[in-house]
Image (cartoon, rainbow, N blue to C red; front, side, top):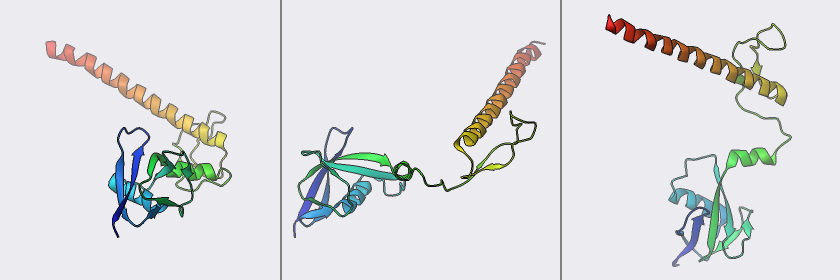
Length: 160
């Protein structure tokens, strides 16, 4: 059987590229894999593609759909993890816990040293992140001030 092609281009690209395959059609999952291979994105596990027909605008959504040879498609690269999270808005988030630095909680005198996990509310997590950013900002301010003081003392020492 002769080699067939599907022409593709990313939305921001000016020129088309091609994917070669054998047969009269290619499945959407095989096309995505071939595009990722051609563009060097096979190891990027968090990347997925939305693919649509360039002439009709039809978006191919089912991985089992077949795209006929000589079709031109437009590819939109998306973050697969963000897409999965968007599809499951009411599911508890899984993954590593966020460790909050040992700083004072603004609402009490108790240090906030517990881990923030999936069971905490969004407000608590945002407060913990805000506190962590404030602590990092304060540390940056301290180190910047120390560097300025050291820099001011150096020219005076050299002139003696």
